[in-house]
Image (cartoon, rainbow, N blue to C red; front, side, top):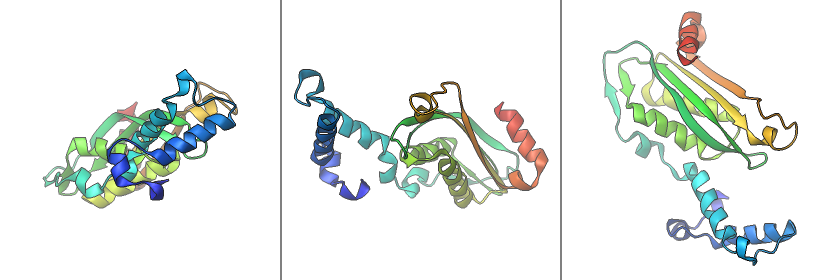
Amino acid sequence: MQGRRRKSSREAGEDPFVQSLVRDLLKELGEDPHREGLWQTPERVAKAFRYLTSGYGKDLSEILNGAIFTEEYDEMVLVKDIDIFSLCEHHLLPFFGKCHVAYIPKKKIIGLSKVVRLVEMYSRRLQVQERLTQQIAQTLKRAVQPRGVGVVIEAYHFCMMMRGVEKQSSKAVTSAMLGTFQTRPEIRNEFVQLIK
C-alpha cells in the first residue's frame, strides 16, 4: 500500500488507485457503486484510509523536533489515558482504547506532547497491539535513554466484537517493560498502581 502512494495525489487528498479498488470491492460485494448513496464512497474511503494510515508518512525526528531536554529529574514520568485508534492488520477493522506510557529519566526528559505524538505515529499504521506496544517502548528508550520504560495498552478490537467470537466486552491488555520496569518489581508495581 505504501509503495503505491503518489505524493502529489496524497497531498491533494485524492487517490484514484485506491478509489478504483473500493469501486471494485463494492461491485464484488453485490453493490452498485454508481447509486446515489455510494457515489462518493470510494473517495471517502480513500481519504479515510490515508488518514488512518498516516503514521507511515511520519518521521520520528520531526515528531520529536528537538523536544529532548537535560534535566536532573529521576522519578517516574507518566502520561496515561492516551486515546489510541488503530487498524488491525489482519481484518482492517479498528481497535481502540487507552495507552499508558511511563519512563524514569537518566538526565534527559522528553516533552509530554511528544509522547502522545509518538503513540499516534505508531497507532496510525496497520498494526497488531503487541507490536504497537513494543514499538512505543523501544522508540522512547532510544530517544531519551532512560533508566526504564513501561507501556501498557488496553484496547477493544472490532475483529472480536463484530465478527468471530463476537464478544463485545473483551478487552486486550498488552505491556512492554524495559530496564528498571522489568528488573525492579517495586517500580513496575508503582506504574501499575498509577494507571489504575
